[in-house]
Each structure stands twice: as C-alpha cells, then as structure tokens.
Image (tube, rainbow, N blue to C red):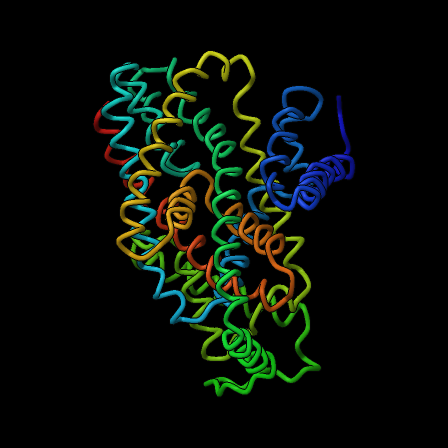
Amino acid sequence: MKFSAIECFAIVMAFLLIGEVISNKTKAYVPSVFLSAVLFMIGFWTFVPKDVVSQASFGDNFVSVCMSLLLVHLGTLMSLKKLIEQWKAVLIAVCGICGTVFMTMTIGRIFFDWNIIISATPPLTGGIVAALLMSEALKSKGLMTLAALPIAMFVTHSFFGYPLTSWCLKREGTRLLEDFRKNGANEIELKKSNQLTKNGHRKKLIPPVPEGYKTTSMILFKVILVGILANWFSGLTHGAINQYVVCLIFGVIFCEIGFLEESALVTAGVFGWLISGLLAYVFAGLSAVGPAQLEKMLIPIVVLIFLGILGMFIMSMIVGKFFGFSKEMGFACALTSLFGFPADYIITNEVCESVSKTENERLYVVDILLPRMLVGGFATVSIASVIIASIFINLL
C-alpha cells in the first residue's frame, strides 16, 4: 500500500501518541517508548511501509542536525558540577555491561555456538553502531547466516529494557521523594535555586540576550553553533571523543558562561518536535528484521538477553552499593545500555512526572535521576559498546 508523505507523518505521530496516552494512563508502568516500539514493529510487519519515518520527513539529514541540537540542549539542563558528579553512574553502568559480557561468555557458551555468542554480545551491551560493526564483520568473514543476528539483538533487547528501567526508576523516584517530603528545608532550597536560575541573578561571563531578540531563530542559531563547535572538537580527536558526548559537555559549559539560555530548545518552542522526530527515527530500525528472521533467532536472543540482564543486575548492584546507590538506581544506570538516548531521557521524565505531586518535587527527582541516566547511557551505548564490538570482531 502506498502512502503519501502527510499520511506517513500521521501514522508516525499516531504511534507516538498512543504510547504517550497509555503511559499517562498507567502512570509510566508501561513506558511510552515501549508501546510505540511495539506498534511500529507490528506496523512494519503488516501495513506500514519500511520507509514511513523518512517519508514523514525524519530522515538521516534531520537526525544529524537533531542529535546535535538536542544534546547541546540537554547540557543546558545541568550544571558543570552536576555533570562531573556523574562519574559514579558511569562506573556503575560500565561495570554492569561487564557483568553482561561475563555471563554471555561463560554460561551462554554452554548453550550456544561461539560465533553466536560473539555476534550477539556487543549489540546486547549497546546501540546500533555496535550492531552494524558486528553485522559487517560477519559478512566479511562469510558468515552470512549470522549477519542478521546483531541487528535482531539490537531490535529486541530494548523491549526488555524499557519496562525494567521504568520500574527501577519509579522505585528510586518514590524513595527519593519520601526523603524529600520529610525534609522541608530541601524544598525551600530548591525553590530558591529555581528562582535564582529563572531570574538570572547568577552572574555570567556573557550577558543575556535582550528579551525582544530571544526568538526561536536566535536560540536555534546559538545552539547549532555550539553543536558545530562540538563536532569540530570531536574531529580534532579523530573521533576518540564521541561528538555527541562533546555536545552535552559543551552545552553545559556554554550555558554556564551565559551564551546559551537554560532549557534552550524548550524556550525556543521546538523541543517536543525534535524529540518526537528522533524517537521515530530510532524506531525506524525495527523495520530491519522481519518476523521470519526473528523467529529463527528468537531462542538464542531471549536466552542471552536474560543472562546478560542477570549479569548486569548483579554487577550494578554490587558496584552501586559500594558507591552509595540503591540497587534500583544502579540497575537503571546499567540498563541504559539497552536503548540509550533519547529513550533514557523520555522514560526518566515520564517517571518523574508520574511519581511527583508538585512541580518542585518533579524538579527535585529530575535533577537527581536525569544526569545519571543520560551520562550512563553515553558511557555504555556511545563508548563502551563500540569498544567491545571492536574487540569482539577479532574473536570471530
């Protein structure tokens, strides 16, 4: 069936909308990204064209710009101090995926062939880059029957990660708010801090733009300038430092000095549009594996995901406890390896809204949970999983 561009756009928005409505109705117990992903997969297997997302205008060019804009924006939500403090979340997340690798390479080896373990483990610890690296390596080695396995693993593991992460964050958010409600002084401090930020009383190196010039075009231009600078800086390191990690860091720095506004893209009025487009682009990857392919590989995928998540939970719990994290928080940080950005941002915000009764409570839990989840996701998906894939290619 042939759909026009506007009809493709309507399908994409309908799938995202249904996910949001159900998430809201279930108070984030069913994350919107989980249900939307299910709808996209069923759609691709039935009536939806494989290129529905690109036809809806969310293609490669849109996403290359969108990612830089969004990650610089996320930097404007944090302080430099808050970002530096997340080294514990990074260690916990990385140790979590080490637990995943250990379980698949030991117990998993009992059940499955060596090449299956090597093909499936890197995408289980991260995102699409690791999956593509392994798929291309398998093709170059002539292992064509296994070439779809890394992609299938990437497509499948997030379905386990979304609800688990939501459950962990709800437990952690509820625990944090119980402490928060008992301590009125914290709430007063938060109100003062929010008021200080909103009114711009904190002195910055660069004075704010006059209100009359604080337009959508002006804000977008400044944000993309920082994104271009971040990409250039990453190029100087020959990609050793991921460009999107630099975008996040530069977003923090340029907001601290006053070049960027706090919550830049929200102020510009375009944040919702960009995050929807990026999420749709992520779901477009579900079109890569059909039901017949998935059925053939389902048993090794499910068993390895179970072993990997078990190893991740054990390691993140042990290391998290050492750093003063609850087992739920440590596990949530490690689980970011199963989906990364933007799902980590969306799930965290949905949970924070569902557990909070007031705006101050929401801001309080967002301030604690969001930096941990974002940085954990970058450490696993953007960095660790690519390193693991590079190593595992040589083991084929």
